[in-house]
Length: 505
Image (cartoon, rainbow, N blue to C red):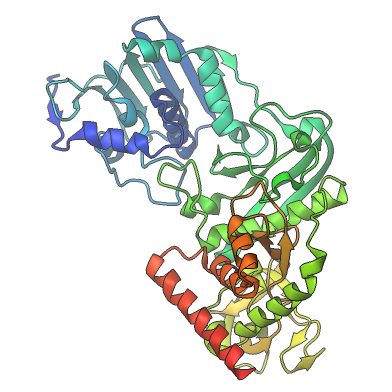
C-alpha cells in the first residue's frame, strides 16, 4: 500500500516549546511520560505497560488497554488543538501525548485499535520542515489483541537518553499517578515487566478520617486524612489532591502552614474530579483565584483543621490579646457592610458564611419551583428575630439533600432572608514566616491579619491600623474573583458600602 504524506502548516517548534513552558516541571521527558499516562487513563485503561530498550538511541514503548482511537480521533491526534476531548472530560491535553516530544526524537510510531478502527502511523520532524511529517503505515501488531494504543518513541539525544531510565520513569509515574493505582483507582502499571507498587497511606495508618463533602454546582470531594505510624516517603507527606487520577500540584497543607506538629507523619488524599475546571492549562496546578477552588479549600480545610485538632497535631495560633477588642469592633463594621442589600446581591461567600442573604427553603405554599441539590445546613434563625425559623434546612456543605430554585423542578419553594451562620471573623496573628498581609485561616475560621508583615508595622507607626485592616479584609474577600476589572469594581462597591455604614453611624 502506498504511503500518503501529510504535512501540517503550523510552526510546531515554537508552539511545542510554548506548551512545555507552561509546566511547573520543565524536563521534556517528564512532560512526555505525564501526558502519555494522562491519555491512557482518559481512554479508560486499567493496564499500562512501559518498556525501555537500548542505550543511544533509546526506545520508549508505552502501551495501554484503553478504548483506542476512532478514525477521526486518530487523524486529530496528529494535529495541535485536536477537538475530540472537551474540558472536564479528563486530565490530558486533548490527546497531546507524544506531540510535546516530537521535536526532540527521531520518530514516533503510534498504533491504535478501537471498536471501529485499526490504524498506525510513523511520525518524524525533519529539521528542514516547519512541522512534523506523518505517514499512515501498516500496523506492526505492537499493541497486540484487543482495544488500546501503543506508542513507540526513538530517542537519540544523549542528554535525554541518559535521563530516561527505568528508575526515572517509575518516580515520575508515582509522583503524578500514584493514586490512580491505589486506592482511588485500580490501574496496573508495569515498567520493563515489573509491576509498579504505589504508596497506599492506609497501610501505615495509625488514625484516619474519611472526607466527604458537597461543593458548589453539584460538585463533591472525598478522600481520607491519615496519621501515619512512621514518616511518609518523600513526596507523600501532607495531602495529595487527585483529579481524574492525577496528583495535581504539590502536597497541600490547607494553609495550616507551620501549625502542624510532626507534618511528616500526616498523609492522605482528597479526590475531586470537578476541580478539572480550575486547573491550569498544563494540569499541574490550580487557579486559586476562583470561587470553585476557594469553596473546596475552605470546606476541606475546615475538616482537615478540625481533625488535626482532635488528634493533637495542630498547634494553637496565638492571637494578639491586646488587639482582640479592636478585632471585634472591626469585624462588626465589616459585617455591617455585608448586610447592605446591594452588597448581598454580590453573593460574596467567603467561608460560605459572610453574607446575610435570601436562601431557598421548601414551602408547600411557595409559588416558585425548585429542585433537590446535594448538601444542607440548618439555619439558626432569620433576620426577623432570634430563633425564628430555627431548624429549617437550606443548601449547605453538610450531608443531606437541600433545595435550590429551578424552574424545571417539581418542588414548591420560597426564599427567606436568613442569617447563614456567622459573618466574617477577624484575628491578628504574628506570622513572620508568611509574606501575606492577610489570609483566610480555615483552622481559625477567620481572616488572619499578619502583624509581622512590614506593611502592618507601617500602619501601626502612623496610627492607621483600623483602615489597614478594613482594606486588607475586603481585598481578601475579593481575591478569588478572576476578572481583574470585575474584582476592582466589586472592591469599589465594598468601600462604598463601608463609607455608607460609617457615615450612617
